[in-house]
Image 1: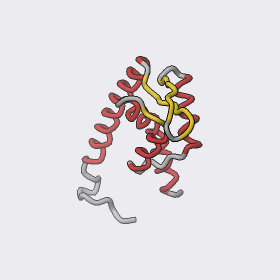
Image 2: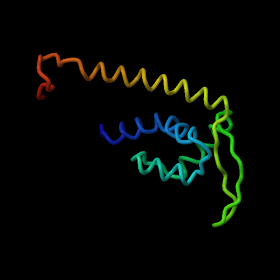
Image 3: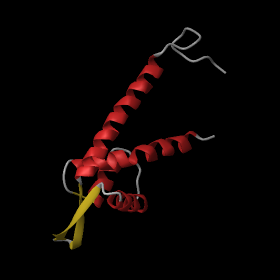
Length: 120
C-alpha cells in the first residue's frame, strides 16, 4: 500500500470544500481557482476542476456570469447561490467536527505509555 494513494484520496475528499471556500469570497474565474489551489498544494488539473464545477452548478450550489475579457474570449465567473452558502456552512461545521475528532485521537497517549509508537 502506498501512502501517496491515501494522500490523494484525502485531498479529493476535501476538494469541493476548498473550491466552495474560494468561491465564497466573491466572483472567481476557474483559472484563479486553479492557481490558488495549486499554491495551497492542492494538486488539481483543469480536467478535474471543470467537471466538478459543472456538478456543483447542476446541484444548485453555484451560479456563473460571463464577463468580457481584455485578453481573449469572455470568461465564466462563479459565485455561490443561497443554497451553496448553506451547503458550505454545513461543510464548515463538519470540518470543525472532524478536526476536533482527529485532534482528540492524536492527543491520546499511546498504549505503551510513551509519546512514540512502538517499533515493529
